Image (tube, rainbow, N blue to C red):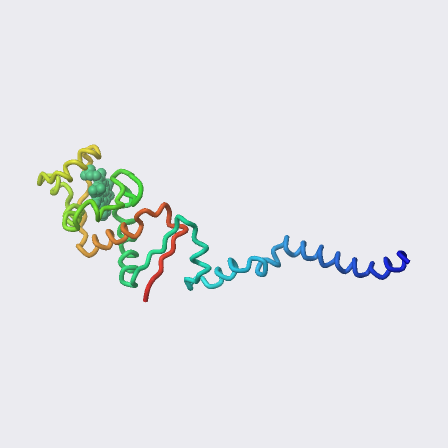
Length: 178
Ligand code: HEC
């Protein structure tokens, strides 16, 4: 009796085995990935939507920065100006030749920052206590004067603010609110 039933079940076992081996093979070659990855795969196909899946995909150190299109534009312009004029000596979150610029808005009023970037030695020469202190602290190294407009300097400050506290650009999301 056992002999008979084994014969009946055997083809089924073979079919089952083919499916199992086939499944493992396809999974290993990545062909089943779009199905098995589920949510993660879906989010990468719609990078523009800030869906719940995106939010949960960010780790705990990430932040969402909400910006209007105007702010995003100012930050982008500031980014370019910063790279072209300041990045050789400054980073936002690290000391390079000059101080890390993060937290600037809390340290100094905007008016001071505008005069400083335009002509830092003039501010130091005026006897401004803060200016003299950082000038001495950074080995009396004179920062160059920049022919930048108030608008351009504000754009750089907007860029600095947008980068503050970010350990790295990766892992953060900027939501542009229309
Ligand atoms: C050649 C190097 C160099 C370049 C380029 C440079 N800086 Fe500086 N910066 C310094 C140094 C050095 C200091 C420290 C003060 C000093 O020694 O005068 C400083 C200080 C500052 C401070 C004061 C920081 C604080 O913590 O109070 C600000 C603001 C600043 N720089 C902004 C800028 C901006 C904006 C640019 C680009 C437009 C720029 N710097 C380009 C070298 C530079």
